Image (cartoon, rainbow, N blue to C red; front, side):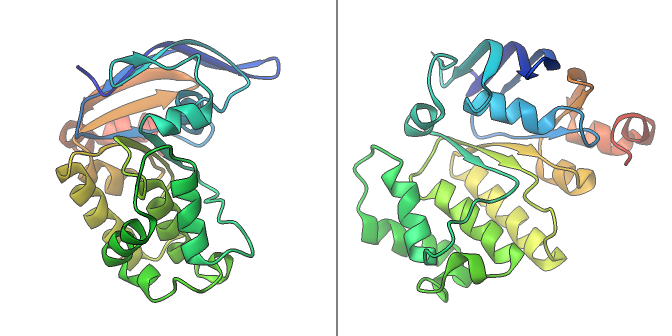
Length: 236
């Protein structure tokens, strides 16, 4: 059974119809890269999967359960987490307090101190800054905090929107190591990413979206080797 099954997904911004019958699936403990040009519909797709679009239709099943009727916070509570492109670190709150928000949004019985200690060991840069205001950290550190906040409630799947954007190469590589560890621990990842080569090196499969429609699916290795398809659908 797929961890995520999307069928005939449509979405609108006002009167603008931006997703047109999008269908794809993600298997448990898999990293899948959703790629394409800016404006192709990548972010809209994962926002719709997360329940953040005001107007959408189609079917989304998560871990065998139909979730289209559920609000975004209800989807989070059953194990679907989301790291938005803009990170949404709460100003005025410390790193520790931002992490606590990830626990407050969950209805799971998780020991707060133990959960924060565990996350701090996974993210040494955050461990050093637990009492620092999150919004005063570098962009890369804030991205790590956004990912840690999504991870702390131990979701089954994480939707990641442009995690490498504006991040120093050394931190991008650290994120790659983290995502592989998450996959190996049983977490499923759907990765929206403009850095196509990096995403394809991480993912087992690639899905290309163009003008709101899925136009190509293959193994990541096949897409990496196909420069014509990359130039047609992914070149900036």
